[in-house]
Amino acid sequence: MEKLRETLRVRKERAILVAAVLPSSGVYDNLAELTALAESAGAIVVDRFKQKIRTINPSTYIGKGKAEQLARRVKKFEANVIIFDNDLSPGQIRELETAAQTKVVDRSELILDIFATRAQTRQAKLQVELAQLQYTYPRLTRMWSHLDTVTGAAGGSTAGAVGAIGVRGPGEQQLEIDRRIVSKRITELKRELEELDDRKLREIKGRKDFFQVCIVGYTNAGKSTLLNALTDAGTFVEDRLFATLDTKTRKWTPSRGAEMLLSDTVGFVRDLPHQLVASFKATLEEAVFADLLVHVIDVSNPEVLAQIESVDAVLAEIGCSEKPMLMAFNKSDAITNMSPLETLETMYPDAVTISAKTGLGLDELARKVVEHYKGREIVLRVTTPHSNGKVQSFLRTYGQILSEQYDDGVAILEVRMGKNQLPELERLRPEKLEVVQG
Image 1: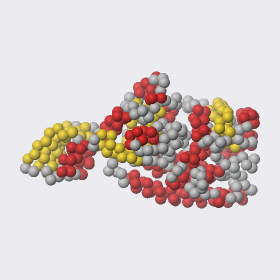
Image 2: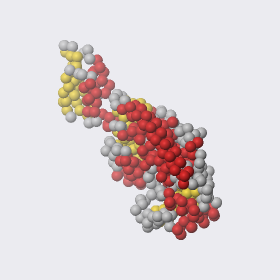
Image 3: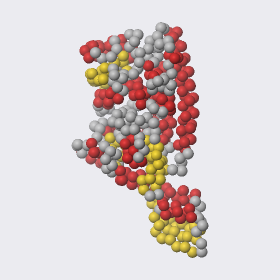
Image 4: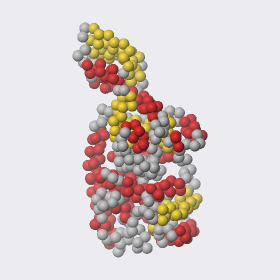
């Protein structure tokens, strides 16, 4: 038992997956997503175990009998890790490990493990390490005596090294020492991340002169592929969960005179650990300060409705539920049965059906984004001196000139343009502005 939780990593370990389903649970295919998560973490799935339960057993979550059945499966399949789709208490993990004589990892630990292997930049590594420590701190049970020599995701040779804080050490005195070490490290990480977050926030706020569009969506929905298709950003793309953790922002000009910033964000997932949402606050600020969210949805996924709900839940958690949003039904090229897509198009008539991979529907997506950028169209009569060339240049770039006349060093132009561009025009100080229509 001493070595059962020497590490929380599951790379190349033989895993049994367990989904305990309560009556209040949604209609998710729990094991399908858990399989994708486990394989993304590098585990080798050898068995799957789904159990409907009426209530949560306080000792083992699934009950003593099912825990014994699980232990027999561990021997049969020679598994060395059990991965639960549920979040378990420290006591439940301990009881299950005792019964099965192997390591038990819950859903949040698994997601943290994946994030640790994906983190590339210093900020992402610090964010993951903080999330891991905050999750693990209340679960400490006599860790090993050399924790203070482990630098963790920010400074170790591998991202997420701090994920290995589950080893049982010599006793309660060591437990208190370990807790102090972890508490101190959490404080240090928060301080360092606050500095990085402030810098990131200043950077985001510094873009206020640009219309900001932020791509959000479930992990592996095709957000990075869409960013690449629209801007040639060169973002890393792979068919796996949480392929990228770091935000990329690129200039995008979807039509003449409509220059904006387009940002990608970390992918969401059902029951995303709160520690990760908190740690990735600066990364998610891209969505908080965006003028428009583009919600990319994988319509080829059978759990598409549940994924939409999960993204909506995370957006609500970070305060973005009232943001203007455009839904993009992606991966339409991968659909064999059109009925689910037709149902979605009926439910969300303002959505755009696209394929970021083939380019299908991207022109329509750009057109709808420009509509949000411009706002409702109005007709203005603008009077400006000939000497104020900036006003005329702005009107010709961002509007449609309907008529123009010149007299006594003054230009009078009638122009159709978006209402959202009116404040920018006013900053150029034309002599007179009149709304003719709209």
